[in-house]
Amino acid sequence: MIALAPLVCALKSVRSSHHSVEKNQRTLDSRQKHFVAWLGSIHMTIEDLDGRQLTTNNVVLACYTLHLCSGNTILCRAILSGTIMQYLSAAGQLYTSRGIRSPALDIRGRYASTITVILNECKRWETVKDRREPLTWDMVAYQ
Image (cartoon, rainbow, N blue to C red; front, side, top):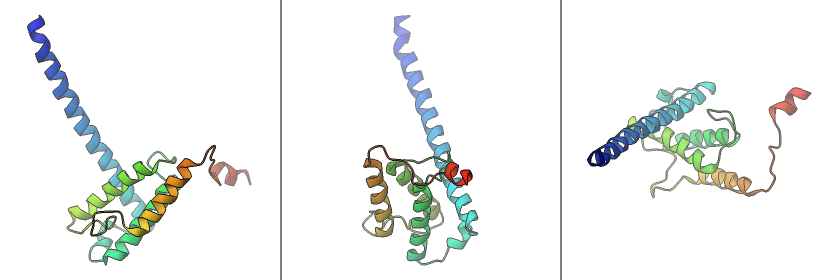
């Protein structure tokens, strides 16, 4: 029975890593679908982004970043700037799969300046103690 212990551990390791890959792929798919749904909400499609200038696509992604910073995520709640960067990475992969350079990144591989400014403000907001959203849906509904 003791001789089987390494085999059982190896099997568990393979099974858990396979599950992790599937989960990561589902997360990526969900974030990409979220980006495509957001494009639909502003009356655009992913095909509309083909052939556009890099600066135009950069502004589209900056607007998406603002949308995410406002708490408009898959679960409809505020997320940290690190998670926002993962949403941007997923959106960038949609661009690269279509043969377009990701507008989230500049030529040095860093986030574009328009996106960096927004992410820095999100990071600053994360450091505020006892922070509260300035306006919530409950406040709007209370009118």
